[in-house]
Length: 413
Image 1 (cartoon, one colour):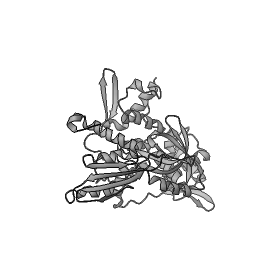
Image 2: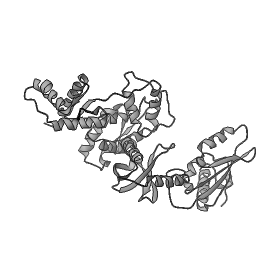
Image 3: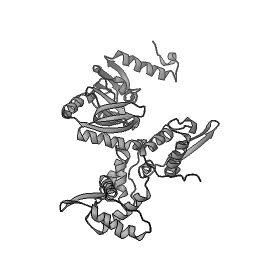
Image 4: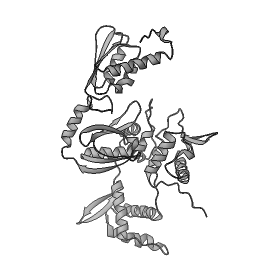
């Protein structure tokens, strides 16, 4: 008899890998997946499809069948990947202890380990023939697990440890919209979904997002572990999917508003500032506490003001001055946009038709996407980085030649 397929997920990291490779990077065939055996692939694919079936589409062509994540135009009420976080495998002993321990603690406010073990045997196991027995060690391990999860609370009562059901967090009506926003845009947003699940009545989100980055919920546990290390001033050992291991002093999480990508920023060997994409990280492990963390953080505060994004290097500062054509009165909205998006740069109006934008960065290539949004308004560019300037202008020439010949566009070498 063949072994029965189990839809329950035991380790989220493996599901995270499959979900990313097939539903995010997408369009892979079964035979193209090299991480594990084809049988393992079939099992994991069926597990994921059982939770995300309404969002999955397949395509059959001459080379084989590929699957992908497909979201319709109408935005889902919640991130579909949250469902993957709400699954877990368990044994028959796990489910028995879950139901009976909570049932015992519902009737009594505080019970010790010994009292709970006795109740399990006297009131529950005694009702079954050939029932197993549970040692105090087994019960204690389950209680410890539930205390870590926040289901139970450990209390010292008359010089001995007792347990009670943890009170749910009070969620006021005013907090509900905040949680709806948090769960979709912030690192660790799945926590917001879990809090909303505590509310009996369904609540609709009042928000709609023009750019909705749902895939990064797969990295929530990595993000929370990084934030914990930053809060506790501890170093991290970072293990990436490519097999590389790195010791890093974590300082901040960067989230791109353009792509939704998340980056861990920190120092390698407390000297070289770098960033690592969270979706490239397989696992992080908390290491030793850092004694001079405030000084390192202060050094980072100075350094981050010279980087447009998560790109850091040891190069000297490059100055950039851009003249933009912005008509006074009718195009003042562009002045507002500059003030909102210029980050560490500055801008001011020179005359009724011209605005100047200035900034100093260690890497001017990082600002290219921002500058391209002003194509057609750039009057002139001045910088001490001639290599970047040549590259930027040549890119613009190449763009123009897609629509006009060099002669028609007036482009000269």
